[in-house]
Amino acid sequence: MDITKILGGLRIAPTHTAPLYLQLANGLAAKIQDSTLAAGTKLPPERELAKLLEVSRTTSINAYRLLEKRGLVITKVGSGTYVNDLSITNQQTTAMSWEQLFTPQYQSPLSSILRTLIATPTANETISLAAGMPDPAFYPLNIIEKALTSNKYPSDAADYGYIATEGYLPLRHSLANWQGQFGIHATADQFLIVSGSQQGLYLIVKAFIEPQDYVIVESPTYLGAIQSLEASGARILTLPSSDRLNLELLEDYLIRYRPKLMYTIPTFQNPTGRVMSLQDRQELIRLAAHYRLVIVEDDPYSLLYYGQQPPASLKSLDTYGGVIYLGTFSKTLLPGLRTGWVTAAQPVINRLAQEKQHVDLHSNNLSQMILHICLEEDSLSKHLAFVRSEYKKRRDAMVHAIRRYCNDYMEFTIPEGGFYIWCTINSPASTTELIHRAAAAGVSFVPGIAFYTNGTRSNEIRLCFVTHNEDLLKEGIRRMGRILTSGAANGTQPTHTAGLPII
Ligand code: PMP
Image (tube, rainbow, N blue to C red; front, side, top):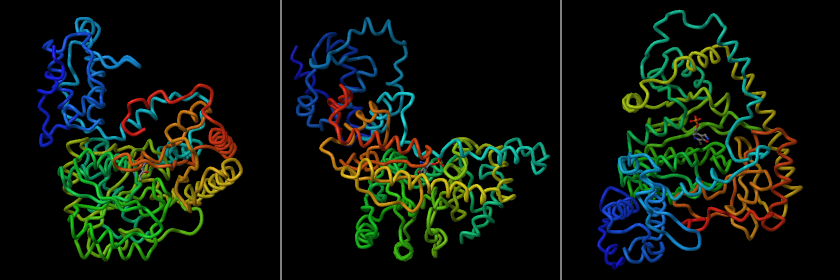
């Protein structure tokens, strides 16, 4: 059997809608299932396969990985990839070939990083500086309980049934009032309540983006946005995140590519913690108004400031109606309410509501009622004042600990708000290798690479300073210092990196 001939005959077309790796995996799967490739056959190494079919090595790696998941091949460490014995695997696994029935799924280069992150075992006592999660000890359960037992709860049973997709009307009114104090003047019909701002983002992508459309994002930026945009087939143009917005580059993009939208987190950005200056915001709006650019302003952190209040939101500066604003209670109150909102021009809200109907008809009524009562009773302001002062102490504790334990290895700017310290690491080890060392040392963080499109290499990491109390933060950073100053910790070399495209 001339395996090169068999494989060389596989047809892989870049123009096909399915990603290349999926086409390759499906082609190989067909040859395995009809026994053209017999059980036990050694398949060429990824590099050779890539060369033979003139695809990238990432494509062949991802194809083999998918086939392995489907049980069609097995990888023997240090030996290679072999066609599995289907007579055995068929008995062992389900009769349904689920993977073949699923629609093509975009495999982001980031997926492998996330897999590594998730697959890296962490001990129970691990101090997580990774997740962007408020401290559960600060969840305002008293406020929720008060709202639940208040007589402001609706007595009309109909309010507990299906409601308008746009959301619980009293909440849309109270949100409109509440946002008025931050200079965002919108009426209730310019609000769509969503199940977290991530859903809002997803609906916006659904409503605006077709494959090949151009979009602009800051680089680095929020991982959830990168994933939604990449999955839509958008072509991503990046604006390097820095203390000054690169307006020349932005204008160049606007003229050359006519992008569908720009996604930005102007205030206490995730992951960098940066704040776009008022002047840049005004310039951005001026340019966007001129080119009729849609701006998606994602704003989960602006109320979590630890010094001066940040500049006005883009939405409040919007002169041309093109800003779509995303808000959420996940970071200010608690993520489990799964309630966020979109504020935008009415036609946008209409279209997003239609998209939302395909997903969940409307967001949960009870969460919406609770939040409505919280806003009406102004219980949020007191809670915000409390968490601001606590998170400030935590930020300072982390800064202090970094200076004490990691001074020679980390560079950072102190963020004025939000959840994160973005650090540049000075170490010969890659940040993904450090993840494994960190896991062994009982601490976790997110490698910077996760926040760049196309898995751009980075020697940065994101540390979240709000989840734990000051003592734990200090201990977490002390452990970080240990992994940075020592070599690889006792036998914990990366186990997932072999053959991975980026790490
Ligand atoms: N946008 C940004 C910038 C975020 O950091 C997050 C949460 N990490 C979200 C959106 C999603 O938040 P939600 O819980 O509201 O879906």
